[in-house]
Image (cartoon, rainbow, N blue to C red; front, side, top):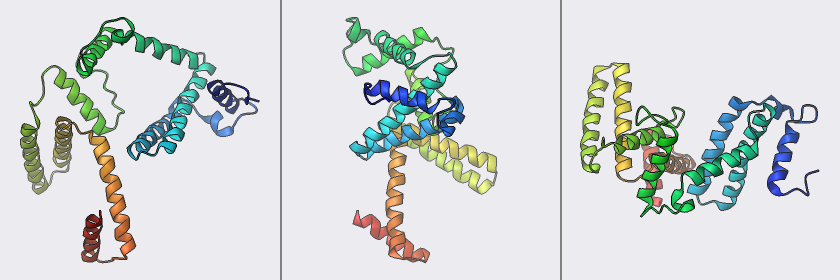
Length: 251
């Protein structure tokens, strides 16, 4: 039915068929905007993983999965008379042109940093904020949101000069956490742990490290080494520790 269509038109036709009231897929017909959100988030992370592991064939597939999420939302929007795929594409094209006068209107910026500031200035004109922190989505992963909050505060001068004082702050937060461990207050302990993590994110930011990516990398490293511990057959804590050290040395 759709074999002769251009790729994007074919994908839109496939999506429309999946949502056909009588001939569509029961699962697709049950979905709404809210129910698709977890799948969209998962697909975005799978794109990130393919890039971080330089798995380019997987990246092509994962980008297709992510594009399908946009197509799904556009189909729901069309059915409800809200918007369709063309509306989405036209809106983002206009936004990119509007926010890039350096490219489309001859207003040149000297470097990427200046362009970033100009971008934020254009955003501010379009969506005025009462606070520098307005617009940072609360649904972001906590590490990513912490970075964004810190960057927003830094724009108006609320920031450390470099990484050195952040290290001092990290030691201070560690000491406060140790105190609460001894004090035994669950609420205060959770609060101090949050402060310590927030400071770790600040340190990563000052070192130009993406904390979310760094933690994902650490997760993969732990998984890789732990699988080697399992494969060693070690059963006691001492044997498992020895196997862990052997896995570290092997890398």
